[in-house]
Length: 100
Image (tube, rainbow, N blue to C red; front, side, top):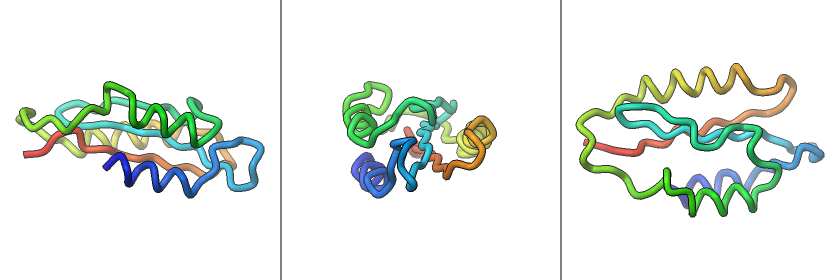
C-alpha cells in the first residue's frame, strides 16, 4: 500500500510555488481514525516519501483489530478537506490499518 501511495504522490507537486501544487493528507483507520500527515506538513514529495516509509504509525497492517470502521476514516477525511486552503487542489488518502 505504501508503494501505491508513494506512486500517487510522486505524480503530484507538494511545492506551493508550483502550478501543479496539491495539498495531501493521509488518514489511517481501523477501529479509530487518525490523521498521520496533515495537508500542511509537506512542501515536497521527497520529505513526504521519507516519512511515509519511516513513520512508526504506518507500520504493518494490524491483523488483530476486531473492527474496521471505514466511516470513521471518511468522517476524518471530510473534516480534513474542510480545513484545507481554498483554491488549491486537494487529495486525502484514507489508509486501512487493519482488516478482518
